[in-house]
Length: 542
Image (tube, rainbow, N blue to C red):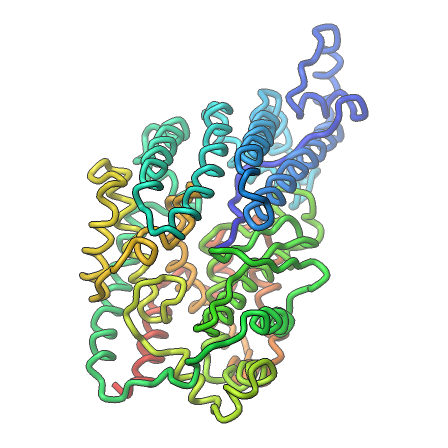
């Protein structure tokens, strides 16, 4: 999970900036100065200076919120939760007020009329700031600040509820968060279904109709393919990765995996948390967190590769975008495309298995000395319906996402409340995965997303997997020998292609634009379903 939700941004001190900057910051201008200010703002150069000042403030606030939100849950003592929530709320309110100041709309409107003068980068900034502002301007700042307080508190309650297998203690927070999101969605766009509003926030241009078509195609592929795999007499074994694995060694293993993936260690902080996530503050500071279980070494391996994919995206946005609204991934769908790409298309490929095996042998020589690369590949790719999304194999994974997508719709439509979630969860896991949910810790409490207010995020995991499959196909058509690169263990050619076609663009281009430019065609889920069919048919000898 990447905590890099594109929302708001920054200003400067009116005492040290031109008067035009003060307008951009939402500073009250004395009436005696208004004529002078307006005259200054009629000058394109002054407008560009005001834009830069606005971006500086938004960046500073975003950076502070990212550091508090990213490191706080990992390092803060329990009693710090309320104060952290208050700090986040105040910063969020400042950010909203800066971007939604009445002077900002005409500023952006004037700049939009000067494309040749301000250049492509500033035009992209104007486009994104206009969109971000439109998404926030009608939502009362107090409502957004209250939501920040609520989610910080809810996240703390969720962590304790999961540890205690206590859905009842978390249940009221789910209802409050959904109610708050519904109110904010109505402020944002009263014409739209509230859930559609939030789906669009995480992946621009999507709604339930889009995802219904997408999941229908994926389900039509995965459900019968999974049934065929379960019926096959050629089931792979994961015995070679079973055992007990020292947790501290696993964290040293995580560091090696980050290096192999190509992350800039000078701009990376790796921490330990209940639920893995990535928080990109800038190209020069990305927070990656993970977990290590003594009885499941592959959990640590693939969560680090997954979060590392997010981090690579954040570390490779064009340096020219630093400190602006463009300096992060364009959407959560495209972000999950990067994480799922390195977790699965690279990490779970047969070609990369020898590299992973060498690292595992370095840290656990006694347990992996006699394991072959092919055995490891098969163990990584056992298609087994299970309970936990983050531990799911590549084939069953989208069904886990589908469960959450369907429950979120019921919560937003009012057809269900939080009290119904454990029952709905159990029914849908039985229907889609054929498993019995024994408790809420491995059921509806397993993910942190709802405590963060991230309703509408889950579908992007499946969409990102599909984006990744299409990008891989385009990469191969473009001349990259994907299998040879993975087999070499040096992923530089893959990173270079993704940097040129996806990463360096930041938010300057939408997912659809990036896919079409990189692949020469619009998005198609067929690459994903074909990939799953080919891979698992070969593994299970169908």
